[in-house]
Image 1 (spheres, rainbow, N blue to C red):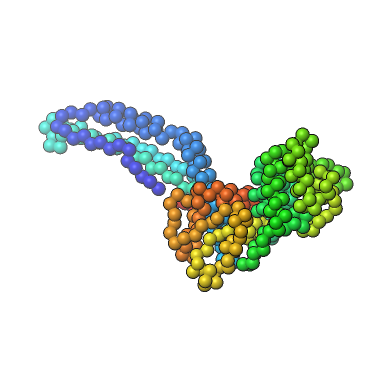
Image 2 (cartoon, helix red, strand yellow):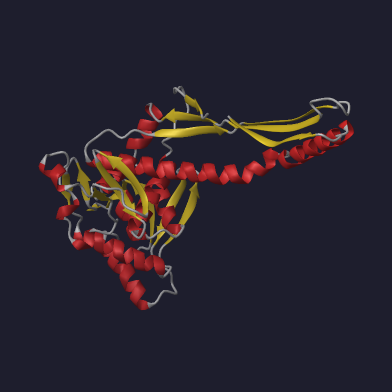
Length: 374
């Protein structure tokens, strides 16, 4: 609560101060106070909306980064969602005027006083929801629907980046894998296939569509060729089919979730769950050497080849850096994403976007933590 006097004036003289003059001054002051403070609600919308949205975005990034770092240390990730924000305002204004008119021979003379006060209160109430329960756990460990992943490619996200982060294997060809301090490098065919898919995507050689079937329902279909593509792009499309063990004379494949190859008309996608995506990203966290020696975390990306280091780095050090995109403290160290590291920033944003795709929220039968901000 903030109390602030707007105007206070005392007049003490030996002359004559008419009371009607004091009344006029008081009325004028009251009019000014009310005019200055009127319609405070509408004017607060633009300020509050941007300030709260920026604060929520920063806290979401910090929470995501902290949980990625905790997974790197085999610690338990904890998620808390902001369920609601109720911004309450109150405004009280007041003006007082009083005076004494004495005779010409009175000792105290004439006296007039004018005072005003404005009390402004901003008291938002923020409700937090711990993300726990069956629904959240199910969303955390259930693989993301392959259709959602490939539709992100259709929306313009780079194929090599999205598939490298969100897919364990394509038609049995395996991606890099990291969990529990154990790292398995990706198959060379997988790395090459993702690079070619990115080039095909840039040339318009990869497409998606949904086909409706009364028996099977809707099916997402991946298209790997267009008739008007240049010869070199068509050769790359043929190489992708060869690397992923797809029929050479087929260009349309139904997406299906499976860790193993399916039928010739299918592209088997072994998509990752949110927990697997977090583990994959956590393997790129830089851990201080003393923590590695103490066994607090196992080595991960230190054994990668340069070609595998395309997700970006979460840096670590004893001090909080200046100008970091986002930074969090943990175990006496600071971990951050450089503002100039576009790959790491893109990966962190994609992780938060995948949380939305996996529908990990749970607003049912959970305790609410409501905190009035005084």
